[in-house]
Amino acid sequence: MKPESTLRFDSLGCSKGGRQLFQGIDCTVQSGHWLHVVGANGIGKTSLLRMLCGLAPVESGDILWNGTPIRSQRTAFQRDLCYLGHLNALQESMTVHENLAFTAALGGFVPNAGQIPAILARFGVGGRQEHIVRHLSQGQKRRVALARLALSPATLWVLDEPFVAMDEAGIGMLTELIAQHLAESGVTVLTSHQPVEIGAIPAQILELRA
Ligand SMILES: Nc1ncnc2c1ncn2[C@@H]1O[C@H](COP(=O)(O)OP(=O)(O)OP(=O)(O)O)[C@@H](O)[C@H]1O
Image (cartoon, rainbow, N blue to C red; front, top):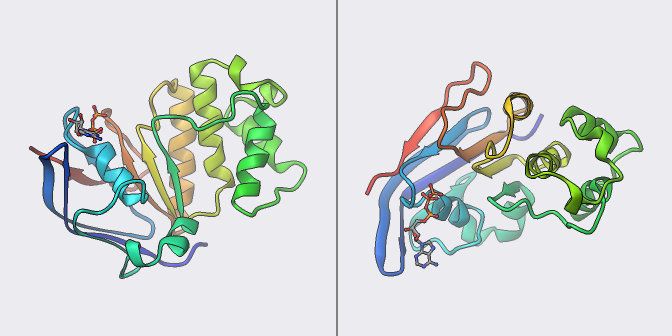
């Protein structure tokens, strides 16, 4: 189990290119729960996720992790965070197995011999372990990228459109993995233009509006 955690947006606002995207967002997500950020194309969902991950500064309001603004606990917060953006962030010239081993090493984690093969098999890419990532299909690359979640010790998963390019089986595997994460007291924030069901755990919906 992971430690009990709380994510809070406190009167959060964001503008881009001189245009206000959203403001006054208040929301709290506790351990074991997930937030589905929804809204029209271009409304600011990715911008919100990027602020949450520290890839863009918080301009107005605050983001608090366990009661403390993330800006004043950068290193500790990054340790608690796993972010998967639109891009898969895989090393294209490395093998599938090498990519996962690399991710684990970055997180200071040494998987045992059977762990990476088991995770890849779970994500339906077990037979591709020694393949160079460049030679995989888009959906296979997405599966490898998402398989990294299973190696992450992070409490907070932030996933931008994780279901894009996934077939039905892939969607099933990912929702199962998120459900397991929540059952272990994890927290997940995701965007998706499609309806999402994570087991029987109801979504907290945050709808961004112009
Ligand atoms: N660096 C930037 N400078 C100016 N405008 C930007 C910048 N980055 C993003 N934007 C604009 O901010 C708005 C919000 O973009 P964002 O990617 O957050 O939307 P989104 O809700 O995730 O959209 P989608 O559903 O299409 O992925 C868009 O209109 C985008 O063009």
